[in-house]
Length: 392
Ligand code: SAH
Image (cartoon, rainbow, N blue to C red):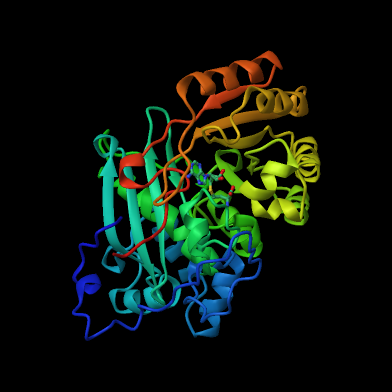
């Protein structure tokens, strides 16, 4: 559980903040929510807009169009969020431009660190009081931001903390991008042990089902990959979009022409078990999801990641490893095994070490590349499936 440190979150109970009740109902078992509840829209931010749209937006408000590129350069290039630092813009105009182009979208309400400060989980409050989390992970050779794409999630996977809380709302492109930019600022300022650095990778593996918020997520991918000052200038291949397997959206992504890495949360090779672990399997079966993944690989030439949380005595049997191996052999694929991270009240735990080792061995026998993911941030509930954004 996260303990907020800010005074806003510890207000006396008789003065409930306006933001308390934007929360979803917990779903019934197996219930799926595809469309997000309609809510007020977050303020428009330059990260929501393409470069020409920014210029137009400024012109409509009577500003000079070239200011858009200047502010964008400060936002994406210099990572300078304080308008006082925008010294190429007349002092009298800075605040107004900031109000129009870089309204505050995220307020940090708690920060927790693990792994000697190289893993940092931030709990953010959005403009309407919805809460989400992001996790920064610095490794020797790269720094990865794990971002949320929805407040909550409608996919209801029973082993995932986010899934149990239901879907509050979709996030905007600006809100998604701002999580990465915030991480980039933290890195640039040398606030993470290891000296100043940059964010090199982004994974859409925080809260939410990215392909259920397709438009905003694609907008975010575009902003993250466009060169400075239009965007953050990350490489598409360093961005991973993870999905439960929404086949029509996977097909759309295939035709998008952005070669991001696609990760598919499979967790079981057979429909009978997957129907219970990933309820959306009742809509799109294992074979349909994998076919869509292979089409993605064929078109983008990108290796698809198959995510498989190893759950003791549930999906970790040797025969399931063989079945998975047979399905994946000779494909452009990589299997990521994730030892199950415990979530509150769950009856499930991670596999025994010997069962995990046997699972790996069998996949390797089928010639399928496989790694076991390290569980960064487990002790701060920051690992896969543990993000609950609880303000308690
Ligand atoms: N909705 C997307 C992305 C978010 S979760 C998706 O499902 O792919 C990122 C990964 O963490 C997914 O593979 C998800 O199945 C996995 N995950 C969820 N809960 C987990 C848990 N308790 N332990 C390990 N992995 C988990």
